[in-house]
Amino acid sequence: MTQDSKDEKKVVRGLEDVVAAETSVSYVDGVHGRLYYQGYDIHDIAEEMTFSEVVLLLWNGGLPTRAERDRFSSEIVADMRLPSQVVDMLKLTPPTSHPMAVLRTAVGMLAHFDPDVEDISPEANRRKARRLLAQIPTIIADLHRIRYGLPLLSPDPNYGVSSNFLYMLRGTPPTELERKAMRLLMVLLSDHGLNASTFTARVIASTLSDMHSALAGAIGSLKGPLHGGANERVMEMILNISDVDMVKEYIEGMLENRQRIMGFGHRVYRTEDPRATHLRRYSEMLCEANGQRSLYEISRRIEQTVMEAKGIYPNVDFYSATVQHAIGIPPEYYTAIFAASRAAGWIAHIMEQYANNRLMRPTSKYTGEIGLPFVPIDQR
Ligand SMILES: CC(C)(COP(=O)(O)OP(=O)(O)OC[C@H]1O[C@@H](n2cnc3c(N)ncnc32)[C@H](O)[C@@H]1OP(=O)(O)O)[C@@H](O)C(=O)NCCC(=O)NCCS
Image (cartoon, helix red, strand yellow):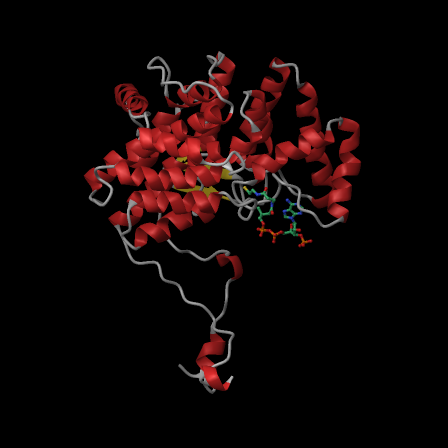
């Protein structure tokens, strides 16, 4: 390659607006603030469909019947147990390890106990997909209970996937409102176009590596504060503020120091994130129900202050923080809950990638020197 052709390459920083894959799994319309799962508007399905129903929609591309959904939900619940070696590993991790770091290791470890791990045929992938979707919530619930010295719980066959997740984590039967909130959260977080972690999963699948590797990579990508890690920092900020009258000064201080307000802004949405609309409603209902309305009031005031100062809208992470706080999930698990939901979308994308694969291998613009004279080590 000549020096000239090397320099002509145009770098698209952050790959913004680069079209890297074709998908029918979900569509994010950033201009109008709309999100579609396999063609269905999130506003129509968010509060109507169960998580298992949405998983079938994402994986198969059509609305399942009640019988299909109920059978699938029972199959997942039946698959929620972990190999004992994985539970032992959870017990060995230091309490200072972030749950997302433990989840990444645990998903990698599950691969060693999955009889289909190296088989990437569609049939084997379906079996692995169902097991992974079932086992990820159990890893998170068990880790939490191990760290708090609580007994581990088995799934309750009377509950679906999202209610079981909440039940196994907290150990108390969720109320009707809490069940709906957990279901909504998992439905809303289950897919979102070609975001960073989904892209990571697709890149790994494009090498024809296995599903466990693709999910472990996606978990690592979601962990970052510019992606899934923002929700934990949102709750930290809200709890730090503690009084609605402190909001303006606190937020303006952050902006003066050029700090990012977590839970605001989005690469694609130019208007309100449609997921925030539903979560705001639930945040209010839940905070009201458990006597913590002030947390909702603080959130609303933050939203107003950021809008006035920067014209930036809240994203999915902002109200998901108070929703999770209100249903008793400790903040350090928020991103892991996100991962358990997003696993549905990652798997749909991985299967789509395998079905129509081309190795993902972009290029880079070389900015270093070329042709430097080599000096042997004893002459340097
Ligand atoms: C999500 C995010 C990374 C998208 O960023 P992006 O598309 O790369 O947008 P940019 O970083 O180019 O930001 C554009 C402008 O908005 C500002 N901005 C964007 N998000 C902001 C935020 N959360 N707080 C304060 N300012 C923000 C930037 O400072 C920049 O302003 P400037 O042009 O005056 O410097 C960004 O909005 C962010 O860091 N948000 C906080 C983290 C978060 O909530 N992540 C979860 C995403 S779902």
